[in-house]
Image (cartoon, rainbow, N blue to C red):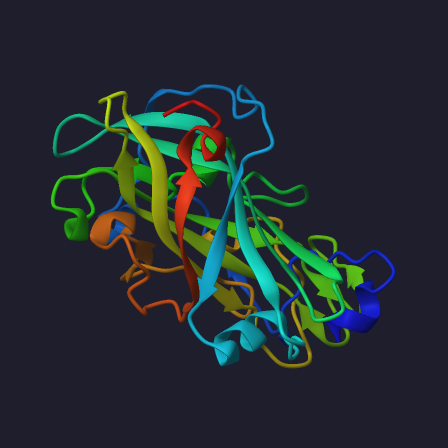
Length: 283
């Protein structure tokens, strides 16, 4: 149970109730399914932005979904927030004209329980250490796009992206390449920013509204080794977290929302996220 493991630190990092199993890594190319790895036209340093990000309150979709996300039943959770801290990773030429931009970094979910104890889970879209079939941040964040191509947005910009949390085995971080002999906790979230609110003076987008979705790693004993490659490039087994599946690939522009192909559940929705803070002034 997450509470007993992390009561001393009052912090939880990417802990979901889950099991394990075998896995295979798919690498970065989806050319066989018609979705080749895009070639960036510009690739800024992912560390070029600084700041602490921006936060917004989350209205949870349901208590049962929130408990599924936690892996335990929270005691009267309050002040549920999403914090977003991202930097520009790469700019791509869009097939429909114009450009698409990938943003990656960190997303965290925090809340307080009835005792006032605080909890935070952190998720990252940046390259992990360990054996990895992905060679660059641009490739690793190729699905995390700010684009006007999402069909629900009618030509307006929107963003979604994958973020993976630390995986634990028996309460301890599980290094990539290591087999878990017992219960694991881990998973991923998808951040969606569907609507951009513009200021009255015409100076540009200032706030964002959207939703957060989650998927737990699920499997059974015996469990395979944890991949070093992020879970959105893992094509089979308990450690895969792909979405927008099309054949053996990911068609990230097919919908701004998770479309059910990967099994994500909606954690909740948010409004009023500061875009200058969330994107470190790089929009």
